[in-house]
Length: 233
Ligand SMILES: C[S@@+](CC[C@H](N)C(=O)[O-])C[C@H]1O[C@@H](n2cnc3c(N)ncnc32)[C@H](O)[C@@H]1O
Image (cartoon, rainbow, N blue to C red; front, side):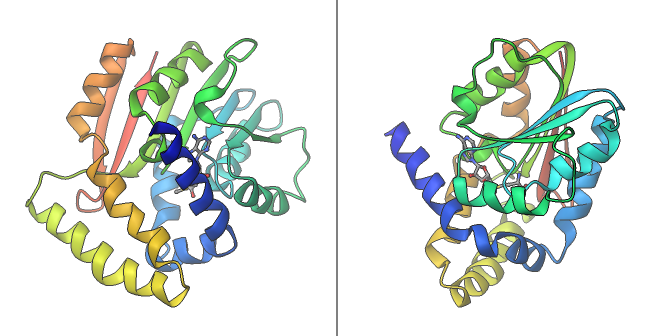
């Protein structure tokens, strides 16, 4: 069952890889860039640090982090869908591979030996993992002793609250019709289901505290539609 979700998610992102950036910009009215910048601002990566961008997709966060950690640090972008990672590689052609490395790998299978990241970020990835708790635990194990991590994803609002109604209207009446034009209706229909199965903010806080993070902060942005989870070890 768990493996089934993994295969389904991988096939979705391989299929939408060519349209992914275009549709992201269109469907979020370009706002996803400012939400990602907000995450990076809160994480405050510094020159000389080594970071990982898990579920990196086409690499948006990797590019933002790389600008902060160079010239002495590096970013490793990790994703398990070959096609979407290829888009990231093409986008990074002009950047020295001293600073950005790309790795095709399942996040939950990353070997923890010899990895010690100062920081880890993930945008719109945690919700897609087979097991959210296992994902946060993996991040904990991949960080240095005082490492920090940040996650950006859809917020899972309280059922029938205004943000919940707004989110459903947005997904059903904007996302679905537009993705249908691109023959990607089935792939984008997956978002609503994945949010339903994703823990709410307070549940994410409880999971992170149980795993052992010393500092845990969850905040919502954009009318409670998106959530940012910041963790310190
Ligand atoms: C919604 S996209 C987000 C991409 C990018 N971080 C962004 O914000 O634009 C989710 C990404 O997670 C990747 N992904 C999902 N499950 C994964 C897993 N188990 N291991 C590695 N990558 C995974 C998908 O291939 C996809 O590129």
